[in-house]
Image (cartoon, rainbow, N blue to C red; front, side, top):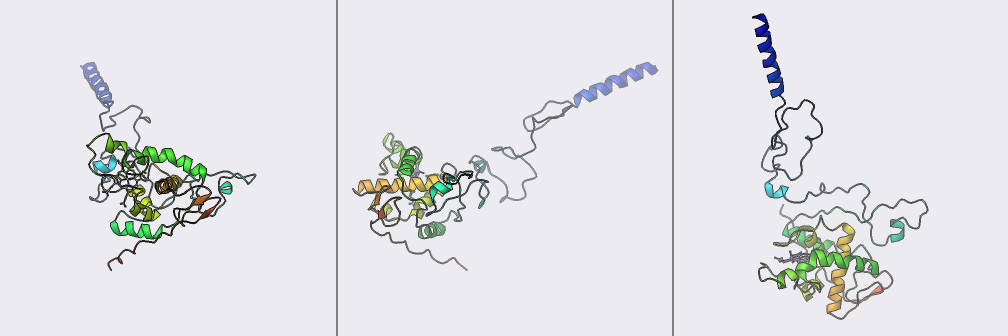
Length: 269
Ligand code: HEC
């Protein structure tokens, strides 16, 4: 009798112990004899309700569509080793070429962008971001050409005239992409383009995660070169007859001046 009770209790104990090793489910780690790193406790990207305590209120709760977006960096932060070069700085120095013991930090980096995605800030951005911080160089224009063709040209056209393949190949594209070589965009400030690259506009999505700081400004130069081409003007390393704003690396900017747009209305008190 004693043995029987002991045996039953023993079997029951082992059955219970085995049941603890229940299989892992979709969102459950299950019970494992030795949990290892299969189940990270850290944030799972692109997963809904990754951490269920993280739902204090609607504002701090990610929606599914937000989770489907690429994750950007924390606002205002610059990743380690990523700094922005500014106009006037010797680019060889920035790339660590003319200093014997320099370690080149990638300048292909990031810079904070303090404008929010509102109409007021769009206007403010166009007013304030006037200069392209990089000089016009042959290498920069060559680097920007494929970037523009891949990221922008499919809609805005390789010539910038708004006749990209997505528009001309089908009649399904919902909105006419902006003609980037029209007179209004030639007159438009660099900030208007930069803002469009950061946030997009209506059906156009943003490209802040696709293009780095330097690439955005190089694409900007490339778009200006398309505008110059359409007007039979020069926009190159040696001359800029389109505007007097962007400085060629080895020449003068002698084109028309670009008037800043009117200031945005003052923020409500
Ligand atoms: C998927 C198609 C598509 C792609 C790709 C695209 N755009 Fe656009 N873009 C549009 C459309 C459509 C508009 C017009 C939006 C509107 O006014 O409603 C627009 C508008 C713009 C404008 C005008 C914004 C303004 O202030 O009126 C600029 C500048 C611009 N795009 C630049 C770019 C650049 C630079 C790229 C590449 C980094 C790019 N776009 C990629 C579709 C696209």
